[in-house]
Length: 426
Ligand code: DLL
Image (cartoon, rainbow, N blue to C red):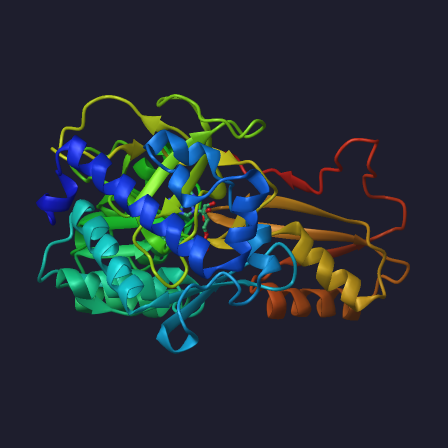
């Protein structure tokens, strides 16, 4: 194990550490972030009310909208000069939500990613192909920092440029690869086209995440790339990748690094905690961050904490694969897209009606998003303009179809479903 002291800490010690860290985080937010002070006051709690771990349930959730309302730095709890890095993730409207890290946070980030990579099979001295996107997205730089911390020879390939990726896999002989599960299949197909089969590369371990996937997909990636694949989970608001990772010898449930992130599973409708083993929304608190800790973040991801003993000696709990989401977030080829971001593009354009519908399909291994928009004029130029604007503001390539006014589904009183997902579960 990479960090036995932290990962196999006796349970009583871990719970005591969590309570200390949660109290420190709640106090920090109460003292330094007016928005949290106000949220606490609204439900009548102060950090002194946090006497046991169960008391956390009395504190308010933090949601995406809180980050948006305090965009960009309203939830930061250190002076501006102490910020060392900023990442961003898609907001529910045109604007991203911003996450800030100080020196301490970057240390936590590389520590938890190093642990994740180690759990995935990586060992110091191995060559690491990092095909997560570098940039505002936390995937590329997040995996990078942890890989260097673990002592891997890190190749910062970033996303895209499949032919070049294939050349690097053939020539630099990485043992470990990190990318989205869907991109792993794209790479496997590109390798196969060059006559490179599963046994012909040096790849042994794949660290896959940033989008939902399943056991079926795992079997496919493992067979086609000749690797052992593990699930890495995370989100920008909490830190980025490395909130949890499966152990490669077990491949069942991702160990949450519970000395840094406190997990709860709650009922999506009532917000009340459910017992371990039951499905609900994952709520996470970052307990050791300083620039922008987040208390009880409502991830929207549906999963469960797995009961049963671990076979690896770790004391942290494991979470199951993500089963779905409690909101309308679409994850397209690893990129988060909210329908409302697409709507914002159409509204800005002004030439089309606000009636639109999103259809998600899968051709081979690639996900496609078709945006169907009602419009009086249906020229190719307008269609291309919408595709270009979405690419610029949301960062994904989509297909656009202009359709006759009145032809798209309308709300029949209930919540209008804007998205039809025809992708089969992977
Ligand atoms: O996707 C961080 C990440 C990068 C994780 C690389 C793993 C690997 P965001 O862009 O903020 O951060 O998106 C977070 O992506 O709430 C989930 O809905 C989804 N997600 C992330 N990992 C997984 C996973 C990164 N392993 C959102 N399985 C999360 C299913 C995942 N969904």
